[in-house]
Image (cartoon, rainbow, N blue to C red; front, side, top):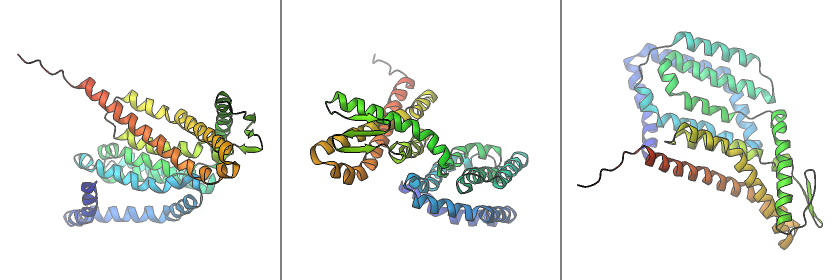
Length: 305
């Protein structure tokens, strides 16, 4: 980590040295970056304000830093590729980005506007660095998609089934444990204590945040491609199980300590605790799969004569 921070602090000096060697290219880069800031600056600030005021999208604020970390990790690999401007593909991506910018719809224009910004960044990399450098930068660029808040209509479409599923599984587990939890749709009750599995309690907020963390972890995993697919596919079931665990424990807390305790500190703090547990599970799965992959591809140790 200290090495990456040192490399990041050295970037301004390297940029100045490169600019002196090729001032025309440096001027073009600055002009394009300034145009990007002029076109997307207000939208990016709006996305940041929206994320800071909505707990569901707090994780969006960390995405640009995580993408920058990815780029720093891959910077040497990217630099080894020849810098041959890819005018055709780069301009095509910039044109598509411009059309999406004009077609802003959805929640504050973030869906189409965010996609437009990502395509514009890819187009600039293609124009300035070429196809090979764009390909090697793809992970860092595509990762920025996690910074885009999803419109409420899309969020609700996926949240409602998860609400019902979490409620059904929670009631079933509680009944198996001997807790007489009664369920009617997304409303559950234990005696006088009743709780509704609302949209915010469906686990969808953890899904988006864990997809971000999972993709970041998997991107650096030295495993086979099908292991990457398995880890990504496991995120939704893992989130549902974690959400059910949180709700079951909440009923146990309500039984022994009362409803105020269950809906107070535990309810507020359990989201973060479950998220950290699930993220730890993904990290453990990565390390376990890497160990198996390394054992499978390592050549057999020759026996001593």
